[in-house]
Length: 268
Image (cartoon, rainbow, N blue to C red; front, side, top):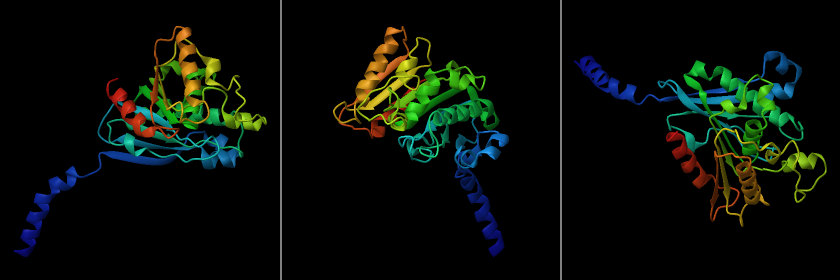
């Protein structure tokens, strides 16, 4: 009788246990460079990996490729908690960092990771025509560079205009300060060259969402850089760029940025 009672309790609980199974799966530390490249460079083998957080049952889902911040000198890949359980996939990317690497290694890594996602996300149920790039600070800079300067993805035979959207959270629009540091140029000396988002303004980009903190609280001239980028894109005839400034927030402006980003993705 005791065993029959335990069996009955198990059968009654089984549907509840199944309902509590996680709806998302995470696959960690996937290399995004080919094995021959990793074999030649131990730092690439160590650093150039990504994590995939994806819905287990859904098909044809949207994917957000997320690049962490850290000034191109630090930071680690992570799935932002705000982007979890939103119905889409999140791919978090690690890339090489200064001083172990120098420009353009950071951008090359970002492009290689995005190319990997385009080529492999269908294996996890994702739609390769619904891939957006996003990041904060240095991560936003990398997202913007490979979204605006088409040569980086072209090296992987991918047209950057296949990207479904760019969410640039407090991006550097001039040449990144770490790249200027490599040339002994101070933070307060603006440079606009081939490593600046502003250098690559064009009319036919994916939709771009520029988000910054308060102009009086942001890092250096970050709001003004983004405002100028928005203006120059507009002058090229670009009609797919929006600029948001979050009053009262500084460079760490993710609290208001994530809800806006998520709402936009859900409405796409």
